[in-house]
Length: 198
Ligand SMILES: *[C@@H]1O[C@H](CO)[C@@H](O)[C@H](O)[C@H]1NC(C)=O
Ligand SMILES: *[C@@H]1O[C@H](CO)[C@@H](O)[C@H](O)[C@H]1NC(C)=O
Ligand SMILES: *[C@@H]1O[C@H](CO)[C@@H](O)[C@H](O)[C@H]1NC(C)=O
Ligand SMILES: *[C@@H]1O[C@H](CO)[C@@H](O)[C@H](O)[C@H]1NC(C)=O
Ligand SMILES: *[C@@H]1O[C@H](CO)[C@@H](O)[C@H](O)[C@H]1NC(C)=O
Ligand SMILES: *[C@@H]1O[C@H](CO)[C@@H](O)[C@H](O)[C@H]1NC(C)=O
Ligand SMILES: *[C@@H]1O[C@H](CO)[C@@H](O)[C@H](O)[C@H]1NC(C)=O
Image 1 (cartoon, protein in one colour):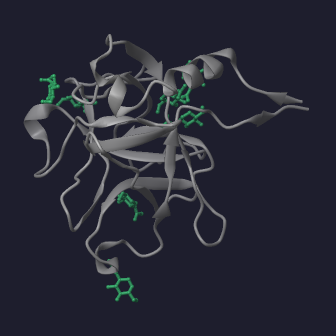
Image 2 (image 1 turned 90 degrees about the vertical axis):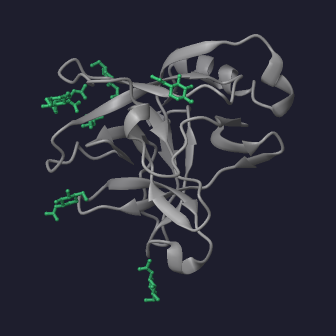
C-alpha cells in the first residue's frame, strides 16, 4: 500500500504559497521542515529522496547511513518563512546527541563562475560571496530568488567517497569547465519519498 504521512500533506499546502506577488502578505514562520533531494546521474544513481543533512558544516543528502569521516553530522530540520525572501533558513539538528554552537543558516554561493558546495554557517563565518537569504519555493521545489522576477533552481549533486551520499552544490557555473565532472541537477522538496509498505 502507498503511504504518506499527514505532516507531508501539511507541508505540501505550505509550498503553494510561493510567488513574488505574495511577498508582502502576512509572514508565517514554519519549523521542523525536512528537505528531501531528488535527481539522478546518467547511470540512474542519486540521493533518492534522502534528507538534506549537515556534515562538518556542509550540506549532503542521501539515504545511506551518515558518513564515518564527518566529526559532526546530523539530519536537520529547517525553520523558514515561505512568504519572505529576506529571512535566512536556519537549521536544527534532528538528533538529541548533536547541538550547534551558534545559529546556523543554509548558504549558497551564487557568484557567476562558481560551483560551490551548499553549507551551513553563522553569519560571522560565511564564505566569500555566500548568501543566506533569497530562498523560497517555486511550486514544491526550493528556489533562490535572485530578484522578484528571477527564481533559480540550480541545486546540483556530486557523488562522495561514501556510496549513496551526495554533496549538494549550487551551480552558478559560467561554463562547463566550472562544473565538477559527474555532477547532476537535483531538486529539493518538502515532499518525503513515498514509502512502499508490504
Ligand atoms: C538521517 O536519518 C536516516 C534515517 O531517517 C539515517 O539513516 C541517517 O543515518 C541519518 N543521517 C544522519 C547524518 O544522521
Ligand atoms: C544573518 O544574516 C541574515 C541576512 O542578513 C539575517 O536575516 C539574519 O537575521 C542574520 N542572523 C543572525 C543570527 O545574525
Ligand atoms: C528525526 O528524528 C526522529 C526522532 O529521533 C526520527 O524518528 C526520524 O526518523 C528522524 N528523521 C530524519 C529524516 O532524520
Ligand atoms: C543521532 O546521531 C548518532 C551519532 O551519529 C547516530 O548513531 C544516530 O543514529 C542518530 N539518530 C538519528 C535519529 O539520526
Ligand atoms: C562546538 O564547539 C566544540 C568546542 O570547540 C566542538 O568540539 C564541537 O564540535 C562544536 N560543535 C559543532 C556542532 O560544531
Ligand atoms: C571522503 O570525503 C570527505 C569529504 O570530502 C573527506 O573529509 C574524507 O577524508 C574522505 N575520505 C577518504 C577515505 O578519502
Ligand atoms: C571535467 O572533465 C573534462 C574532460 O575530461 C576536463 O576538461 C574538465 O577540466 C573537467 N572539469 C573539472 C572541473 O574537473
